[in-house]
Length: 166
Ligand code: S3P
Image (cartoon, rainbow, N blue to C red):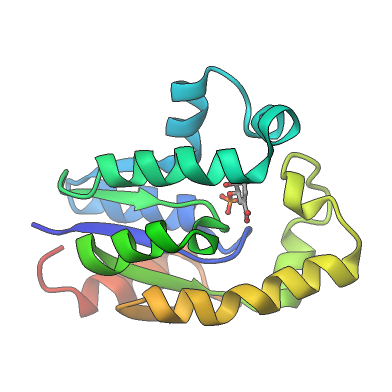
């Protein structure tokens, strides 16, 4: 069975939905950020601060690749689509689902967040990052699901209804 990857901007609910889908369908759930943290032995903010985004994207790609044939459900980090190699892996090796969220919903969900290095920027920069990524999510996605104002249950049910092999 093909591995499933959930993509989408920070705060779109990739980990929540991924965990739910995996437990309801007896598949293993992988949170890519957690795997990176384990592999590196340091927090994501520390990796960004010490080695920069480019290094982080390289590790992210390597770990994504490790799960491409593992028959798992992977919640990716919101910026994974910034790396062309990762986009190729998502397109060629996963059934990739884009959790599409509006910018305002993200602002609201992450208003108290201070853990994500790329969220700690001006609102203009955050919005530009959001806009820049939309086409990249679209490029990689086999399926897109709107998550605005919907519960994790509703979203998981829509996904399950569209994927016969889950
Ligand atoms: C990032 C999103 C984060 C994490 C890192 C970079 C991004 O994951 O990978 O902070 O560039 O959007 P979430 O999407 O799970 O917050």
